[in-house]
Image (cartoon, rainbow, N blue to C red; front, side, top):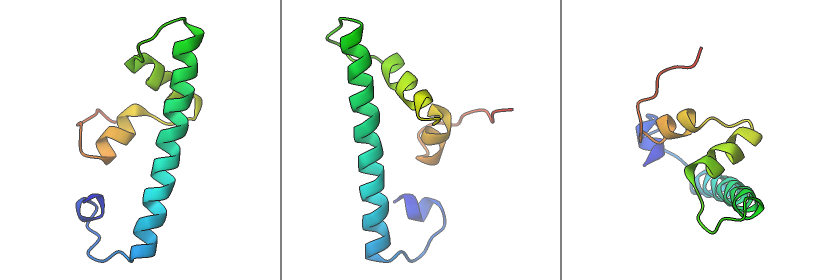
Length: 78
């Protein structure tokens, strides 16, 4: 999947598991933070803005994550 997209032909199972675990934890933290923002705004619907603000708080860029996953062709940041 992602390893293939990056040109990695072989990836040991324990490495793949470690990457999957770390990614899962990061997504969980971002969503939990976004839900806090949603509740703080007295809303019941999670918005893209909530997720973007949570990513920004963790110094992660939406564009870099989407381009890494090949979901979007983002313009390079200057």
